[in-house]
Image (tube, rainbow over the protein chains, first blue to last red):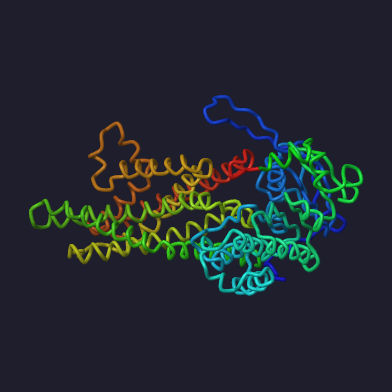
Length: 274
Length: 270
């Protein structure tokens, strides 16, 4: 594990993440329309995560998953409610929270002309991590994720989507976050890469003592990784609990639970996915 | 101490990133540098329309100073304001803004690169101009001119910070607006002509531009050999305007960032 130049005191006994009555709305306007309309992206969500838990957030496109994760990541200010990371409010103690978290988003955002090595040097430099340590650790992580070391020397635009996503995961881990926010980290990966990343997430929890929030569309992934699953639809949590408990209440499989709770049949769901 | 080390590493990370980007776009960089040299030469050549002699030499140097200074100040302004534009374009802005560093540190790194890059690029143009024109700089106070140039970076960084707000609020329109600001500064600052050449109704704008004072002072140092002590007043004024403009620019930037985090305009989906 790489030591950062700053250590944040984590108060004992506080949960890794506490979300209390959070709301977030945006103003939107369709092309050609003159009137703005208010769209509530997240509506009165509350949740508490103990340390080392992996929480899965399942929801259809546009259900508020990314907005919720962005609020946890200090990138969006909630309209109402509070988000606390290890007891620190994300709007009042932004710098402290940022030292404790990192995020992987669905789109692996990089300077596309720069190599993976150069992108990682930039990203870890912003966190005060010495470059030599970062590069050594990056090789270890990417080797573990099945990305050959020579790919570090290649401009990101020449890597496949899956390879870029692996570099994005390495970027997040290199800063040793205590809370990892993974926004659809395996979307677009081939089955083998997906397996490797999933296995790695479980290892990160063990080796880094990390708490993880992961949004996903993949029911198998949620079942495999998550201690608890929240199903979100139109900005609200429709259900929150252990997968076994949700299945006992709502359907034989997590997929059935999902479609039951978002108000679609499995057949409608399959059609809308097409 | 560890905080200082961390923030210094962050500034270095930004400078190094921009250097890597420069290397990746080297073809374009060479084209821009070549264009800058040619642009300065063509502007200097306007002076050759005068009969040979001291007046022609004076005019060539007068125009060359304008071209060189504008080259430096516009690079400074562009690099600072375009840094946000570039991050938005690549989609990395959320990652950069999520890093646990002060915004001052982030912008400090951007400005450090802008000053370094601007100085090197301007030096290249200066070498091109010197080789091409063989103008005499006897009696010029080059130390004084250098002092004014360095000090004038400070208010221009402040202006750049304010301009960087525009692409933060709107990616495409913001970039367009920064070009407009740069164009207005070019028009009113007396880059290639004295302020007296401007129509009366627009002359007031020249008073507000730091470039006006920079150009006037550097020309006094190079063309008239004005001693360094006579430039201290202007230098102090430029520094003072920077002391106002930089915190103002930083404050406006942080307000705009706060606005973007409320409205979700940094990026939002799902």
